[in-house]
Image 1 (cartoon, rainbow, N blue to C red):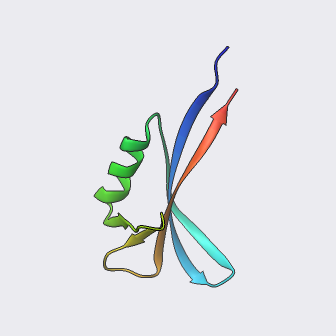
Image 2 (cartoon, helix red, strand yellow; image 1 turned 60 degrees about the vertical axis):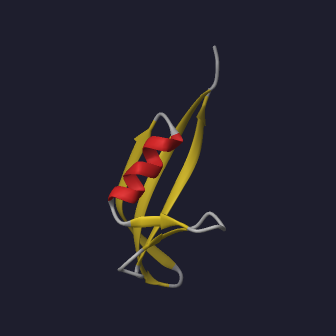
Length: 69
């Protein structure tokens, strides 16, 4: 059996510095689809890899990799 990678795209609202509240979480089979999901919701990726919203700075995004064995 081979390992499978799943890309999780998560959009959260930052209420304070210690907590975030997930608004959307979706799984994709390729990174390109996860990145397109983030861009569709108004996020851009910075050079450091951080997904930031272009208009609402209380929203943050992240694309995580999950390996399924």
